[in-house]
Amino acid sequence: MEETTDYTIRNTTKLLAEALRDMPPAAKYMADRHTVYGTDGDFVEVGYTPLISRAAEILRKRNGWSRADAVEMAFDSLLYGGNGRKWERVGEVALIKAEGLARAYCKRRED
Image (cartoon, rainbow, N blue to C red; front, top):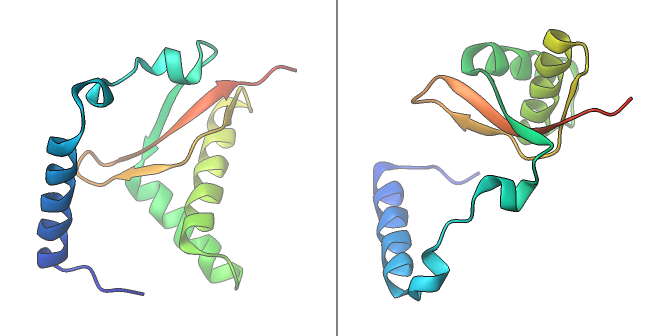
């Protein structure tokens, strides 16, 4: 696995800024989330620390899972434990350490 350093982060930010500057104005428009995802879902957030603890527990118990798989399984576990499976994750899990949470797009389950 490649080590992430402050230099690679700054370099990546510079590349993204240059790519954004080179984009045509129409491509910079950000669509409303309901346009992209529909109106039958919403973003659900769970705590960062409980999610990471649960993911670490999953990694310790099962060899062969990647970190991303463990994070998704931990998010699903926390999501289903708190609301009786009213929601189902359909998007990727985003870890937002600065805000202390993990966020994923979820849709209401139809029973």
